Length: 404
Ligand SMILES: *[C@@H]1O[C@H](CO)[C@@H](O)[C@H](O)[C@H]1NC(C)=O
Ligand SMILES: *[C@@H]1O[C@H](CO)[C@@H](O)[C@H](O)[C@H]1NC(C)=O
Ligand SMILES: *[C@@H]1O[C@H](CO)[C@@H](O)[C@H](O)[C@H]1NC(C)=O
Image (cartoon, rainbow, N blue to C red):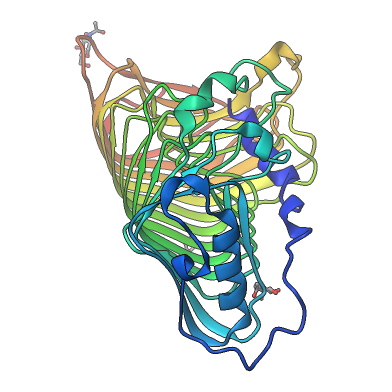
């Protein structure tokens, strides 16, 4: 299931083509507010409003100064849409979503790897307004074969940000995505807060927020209840801070899986803090492929002030990830993990092995520390740590006790 996450990497440039922005945007166009209803949106939840949205975007993008696209309350049915820049004379562009956008359930409308609503190549975009992106995923979840098949067709991600700079996403909801709820690809300076993500625990691959190749991302004060990772930090990310997240149901907050493809880039300077994980399959996790094709690294990652309630595997480092039984015993992960710190992590675990630190035998983890990790078994019996190829530094309280 982790496998599909790296596919986005390959699709990164897909959206760069055919973005449809006409050259020579007119400086004479007035700035101000662009209401999708003035561009023909019906807001009846049944007729396709995509054209009206694209026309409103186009007009806003060609205007200048501080611009707002208004989506008043109401329900708007949308096919896949790409809102693309550059918007040359626009200083800031606010996408004020007060209504609910509903995705078409017809998968034939989506190109290969295409997302549903995509914002690309814009600088200074704010998406806010208290509205909802409803992926209507329940209809299409049965067609998702990715949990079982390696070469599966990836279903559409609900909201994608591709190569954007200085983006703010605030006070919006993503409901029942077909696949990932949100993906951040190649963005610089992205601030998300007040994001509510909701899908059933059983929905396949409905990761909350997935990211690849970004720098300067903060995600704060958000509630994520979904069927897969609440937040997943893929390759090529640096300076990512995740805080104030309430995660669960879901599979926790993960870095990885890293080290599957040749062209992956390093991960560095990651902080996950001040968050709660409730009833999740994992807590915080770093995962790399056992048979990575090239050397990369993931360094300087801190996981602190976390509360776990009935979490399956609260702390996991796993460098032995090898699905499909294709790795021989000599394979070892070439993703160098170093400078990784777990601090002040408490709460309850439902599995007896509460801390797993399995590092690469060819490249053992370095500078790995655990300080004040205090977990209790939700059931009867003691809890333990499992370690491989690692010498961790322990301080403060340590329950489970360190590996011998
Ligand atoms: C974003 O910033 C990068 C680096 O400064 C720049 O190369 C790129 O053109 C910018 N993109 C947009 C859409 O402004
Ligand atoms: C580690 O990451 C944090 C958070 O991004 C950053 O503030 C700090 O400077 C980094 N430390 C080093 C040594 O790069
Ligand atoms: C559980 O841990 C306690 C304290 O370390 C120890 O005395 C006890 O024997 C352990 N119980 C089991 C079943 O291992």
